[in-house]
Image (cartoon, helix red, strand yellow):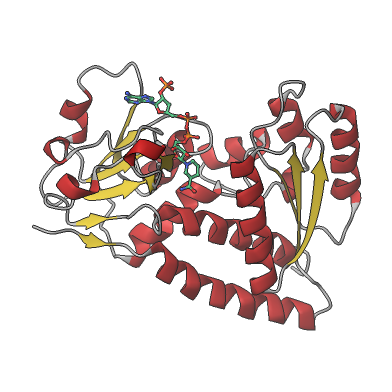
Length: 286
Ligand code: NDP
């Protein structure tokens, strides 16, 4: 079997076209959707993510505000700016690019963002709403994965779903979303015994670990749907390219559907951020 690749760029482009139409409808009603992005420090990966988010906004008809602070900024300055953005009725989404420098309490920063503008879906109130099956904003990466599964018509009810990784931004919300679709969900992590025992049972396998090519073909059930969330930069002596947590060469011979890295989940994450921003702006006219 050679797996079909799920093209995240193509799906993103279709969805972003629909978002642009929705943004135009809002503008006709006098509302310009607006996302504010806060970047602290000079981490190159974070700078690229922010640049891509701002570019995504521009192409979709969403206004963006980008605030950049030096790495040694006092947290109170950033918190004051968040308060200002919370109070601004023309701003519909606020995100703070993570990670933050060590002087910051990340949780306190995320909690400072108004839950009504928390388009990353990381505020405790929004995490709770997701747990209760009444999401306000769904965290963007798992939301993008659900859209990919939906676009391929993957049958979810009753399926065995195994997620490797239990972070607050990917693994845990992914588990909640698959559970809400009636999958039987297993979440694995660094202390799980016999990882392959679990992964081999998966009809849907989501890898969100951050370890290059750790999921190999012998760990995958024939015909499984394999979603690779990982983004890893290989060392220069191995080519310096981006790769996922899934060993594409061996897994594509076993799986039925597979997301590539790059060009899989990555572009969908930004698309869902734009979706959440637009949704937030649309709530202003309801
Ligand atoms: P974290 O580092 O927060 O979490 C990694 C998880 O993997 C942890 O739960 C950890 O377990 C688990 N883990 C580590 N080693 C093993 C192992 N040997 N076996 C099983 N589980 C293990 O990472 P994130 O969730 O933030 O990100 C995961 C990956 O996804 C990264 O490569 C990141 O770059 C990428 N990413 C991609 C996005 C996209 O848009 N495509 C968006 C966000 C992230 P434990 O909890 O026990 O430590």
